[in-house]
Length: 286
Image: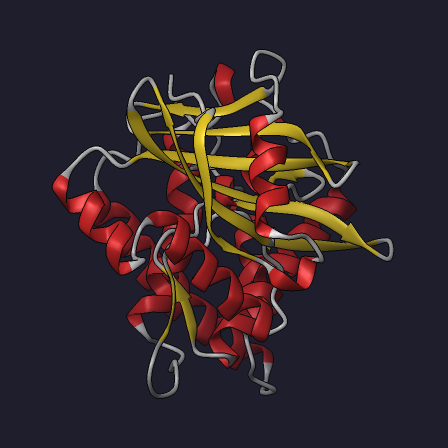
């Protein structure tokens, strides 16, 4: 288990608009009792925690993503600001600028524990459960399931309009929240968000791959998405205004294309179960 650092804490980047100085984030991280923090994700090369940080006497529940800087490659990435923490920050900014929900990064902090350098990204803890947990538990009414499906279709449609793609859009990386009583979705892992040049055409492979990955993870944990809900997502994506037959032709083309990608992928079982003990209440896919 990778426990966050306690020694030599230094802030490399922080959200100046949040109203807190760099040293305040360092002191807040140093003051956490990690034995009382919640471990959300535990992998050989990373960990994700939810903990209460006291920043300038104000307690906040935040998420902390940690990775060791334990190889030449990661040291070079740290120097070039291309580590996961920096990529997550840039991805979140791309989404924010496009009006798409994402966990807000607060600070990137480096420190040591047992002599090892560890990078920590402190970020907002979005309220709610992951989309994967909603799919797996199936404890919502039909109406709410349809609302979530439409919200997901709307999210993807917004990304298409803004020419954004996500190479890792699995449901464990999306949190279902509520904004003014309405269903809203937000990304908690934005490492693989990128902006593409040109227009994302309706049959663009990037979009089909995003849809494929939204289906694969639930299949891999034995909770496949119901076809009726997948059709709701597609309906929200369709920008046509033609006849019912035009909709059906478009739907069949898209569903057929995405289904072929799913079949070609092979065994979707994840290496680390996002519904396992360490992540049973987590909005973090990692």
